[in-house]
Every structure is written in structure tokens, then in C-alpha cells.
Length: 243
Ligand code: PGA
Image 1 (cartoon, rainbow, N blue to C red):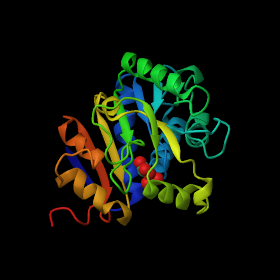
Image 2: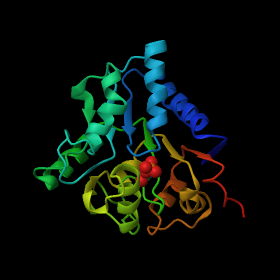
Image 3: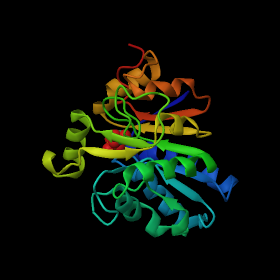
């Protein structure tokens, strides 16, 4: 695991974007695993800037997002499909047919099976990850099996609270209580993993990820077993390391 400690969120996002852009530039047909949340917004900003300045093409790139809320249509402003359009896809030349976000409505079990079949076919060259304050990756909450594949989950109270604060004006009742997420095995299948975390709220998760015992109670600790992981953090998120 390679750990990069940055001075600021902006610096971290620039580093993160460079890593993703290297993958796209070296393989125009790259398969990207993408994430939502507050963390990747700055990375997507850098990718959009690069597209404008350097015209890196996404014409043949394929993308798979980690997760989606259950019960929200892709047109709902809090859906992750909508988030991706707003922050990234609308600015790039990516083919909409190559963009995949799990479907959070309709026959959700079938959606999960279909997503797993597609993920098996299109191995991600890089998977971008945030991390929950409780150590979740995607919406794989504490206790999830390391062998899990795309499935429906009940969100933990801490995740609902984090997301209410960040995206739902503090309105806990408005946050969906279920989601569909890539499983931990799907995440581990990616050739390279880039996990990013900023702020004091992530100190426990980063301490466990880097120095903790690998266990299902802290889902991100599985990444200790992957042979190509880059972790980008700021000093706040790294504050408990090596203490
Ligand atoms: P955040 O979420 O980027 O909004 O902090 C990360 C996560 O929950 O995976």
C-alpha cells in the first residue's frame, strides 16, 4: 500500500486525478471504477479541467460506479447517477452507453445480478474509492463479507448521518435507508485501487485501513491484501497513524 499525505484537499485531488489520467492515457479503452461522495468532487474537477485543456479522450472508456441509493430514479438530484452527470460525465466525450451506475429501482435483485455479470466481463483498470467514517467502502458496511458481490444493503446509522449532513441538508428522514452496491470482491477485482480520504472525520477509518487488523468489521482493511493500492489523505485524516 502506497500512502501519500498531502497538505490540502486540492493537492490530494490533483494527485488523484493524475493517477486516473495516467490510466486513461495509457489505455484509451480503460475501464474505470468511479465513486460518489464529497471526496471525489475535486478529482472530477481536475479531470474536467484536463479534458478542456488537454483533450484527453474518453470516447472508448468504460465506467462503472460503485453504488446507488435504493428507491431513487437516476433523475433525482440526490441519486448517484445524477451526481456523476453533474460532476463529470456531462463535460466529457464519454459514450453514455459505456457509463454504468447500478440501478436503484425496479427489480433490484436482477439489477445486482446484471451488474455482477458486467463487472466480471469488464475488469476495472482502476477503482476510485472514498471511505466511510466507519471504514465502509462503496456501501459495504461493517460486517459485510469480504466475498460479497453486488447486492442490496441496509445503511448503518453513521452513514445515514454522514450523508444527511453532506447532501440532504441535515434531514435524516430524506436519506434513503437502503442502497445497491458493488461488493467487496468486485472492488478487490480491480487491477489498481485509489482510495482518498480528507478531514478529521476519517481518522479512525484511515488508522484501521493502514495499521489495523484485517477484519470484516472494518471493510476497508481488506485492501491490505491487494497488491496495487494508493491511499491519498490529508494530515487530518492521517493524524492517528503511527501513534
Ligand atoms: P465522502 O464519503 O466522500 O462523502 O466522505 C465517502 C464514503 O462514504 O465512501
